[in-house]
Amino acid sequence: MDRLISCEFNMDTACVELKFDDGSMISIDTIAVENEIADNMYQRSELDYLIYNAPVAYAVLILNGDPENYLKTVTDYKLLDS
Image (cartoon, rainbow, N blue to C red; front, side, top):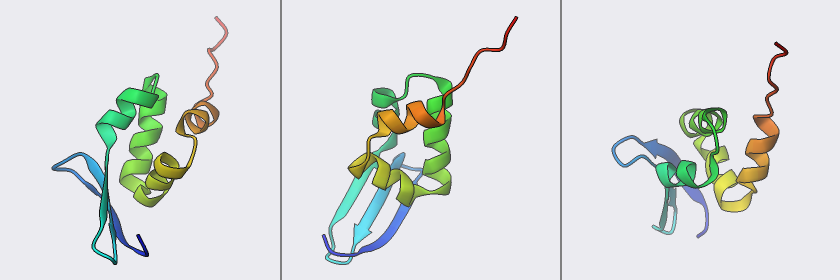
């Protein structure tokens, strides 16, 4: 895998597809990723935001990062006092 030519979300397959200049391709099944690492609707929403608005960042996070730690950090929410 040399250089990335394109990275986009394919709505038909629900996959983020990365295409490289050597002809290779990586397809990330976003539904499987969400089912595996997202514990609540806030984490799913964060992943959905990345999928639609920053597919390259999503791919980097899933392939090279620590998605569980990232989601726990960005979706830290606290219950309101009653």
